[in-house]
Structures are given as structure tokens and as C-alpha cells.
Amino acid sequence: MKYNHKKSDPNQHQRNSGQPRQKKSMGQVFLHDEWPVRRVVEIAQDWHAIEVIEIGPGGAILTKALSSAGIHTTAIEKDDRFAERLIDSALPGVDVVNQDILEFDLGAWIDRVEKSGKRAAVLGNIPYNISSPIVMWVLPHLHRLAGATFLVQLEFAKRLAAKPNTKDYGSLTVFTQMRADVRLDCEVGREFFTPVPKVDSAIVVMEARKEPLPLEVMKKIESIARQAFHQRRKKLRNAVKPFLAGRSESDCPVDLNRRPETLTLDEFSELAAFLT
Image (cartoon, rainbow, N blue to C red; front, side, top):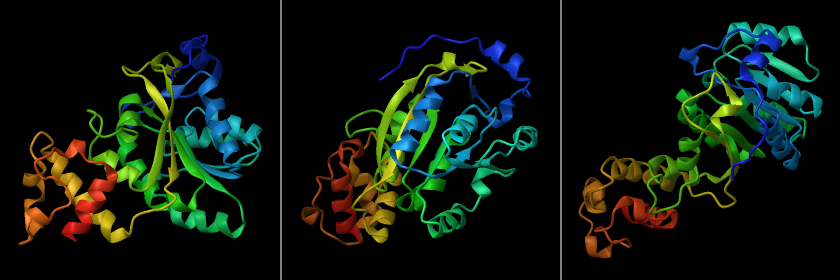
């Protein structure tokens, strides 16, 4: 769904806040309206998350809302200017780490939170240009989290949550949904950001699958899916040929004349089990 809300003036917001200008090279696009922030906080509260990591707080609109909600926040900010500004603001319950998120040790952070017996989550309005690496960074740890909620480019959100037989369904979909139940929570129009991007965004929610596949099977599915969707318009037979290794096609549980985008996750799993 897509919410329609009264729009605020993004330029007025930046003038009033006195915040540094965003760097296009870092993909910095900041919210200037409260309603998407409230929705992200609501999701964290639904999970009863007491500790969260916020990726790229930037102008701190979400950080302030998390602080006000009493959610302890570890804000990971790569940009020195915004990190220093956030440290100076001394928001209650907010720890600032001036670091590239992809270099942050998520496993060690979860270890610390688990020892305290608290529920944890990862949140953020993440840069469009590194959305995929961030998802890959969080997925291996998702089973130890209440969940992850990201504000991302709408096209990217659709790929994460896609169903078979759609144009958005691809190797990223398979890789993500093997580990996570994914839903596109709501769309967020481009007019709610500054500078105004060329595309709309969406809030996407990921929670760990209740019955994850064995690691060996997942790795095999990843290899097959990567190869298959590299040639998505060709028959599946072309993609799995290197994996057959003398096995008879007649014994394969999946029709190799099909195209990869028609396969469900269960069918990718059956195919991987056959080829393992």
C-alpha cells in the first residue's frame, strides 16, 4: 500500500535543521516527513525490540524517534560530519559509531545483546547504492534478531518480496527468501525525501524463516540460482548442465525445460537436493 500524507517542504526542513548537505557519492537521501519514521518505530515496538542498530542515521529523524520511544539505539554513521553532529546532540539511549556499516561486526553486537536477554533488530533508511550488500550483511544473522526493517528503493523492495512468474523474481529474491520471510510493508513517495530522488521508496520487513534450509542446500541453491538467472530467458537445462555430473535428467524432480523464474523456493530446494 501507499500512504498519502500532507507534504512538508524539504528545503525548509534542511534550513531549519542546519544539517550538512548530503553527499551524492554516498547515496545520502534523507526523510523530511515523520510518518515513515513512525511506521518503522511501530514495527520495532511490535517486535518488542529493546536494542536496535540504525544504519546511516544522517539527519537523525529516525534516531530521535527511537530515542523518544525508549529504544536503545546503536547508530552506525560513516559520514564524519553527521556522526559528530549526532554525538553532540547527546540523545538519550543513543550510541554513535563512526564506521562503514559493512565493516561493523554485527555478530559481536548480537552476542552482547543476547547476554543481556534483550530482543534486537536492525533498522535504517539505507543508501540505494549499497542496499544489496547491506541485505547480504544482515541475512546470515537474521535468525538471531527479531527482524530487520529497511527503507529502500521501491524497485529493490519488490525484488526482495517478489513471487515466482514475475519480472522482479530473481536470484536476489531466492537468496533472501531462503533465509527470510519478506513483506513489502508500504510504499513511500519520493516527495518525502530530500534531495528528491528519481524513484519512490518502500519499507520492507524481513523476519527469519521458521524452518531454514540446511546450509549445504542453501549454498547449492545460490549457485544454481545465480547461474540460472544470469540466463533467465533460457531453459533451466542450460543453467544446471555443469551440476548434472552424469546424473540422468529423467530422474530430476523439476522439468528442465522450464525457465528459472517459474520455480518456487521449494522447487529450487528439490533441484538442489537432486544435484547435491
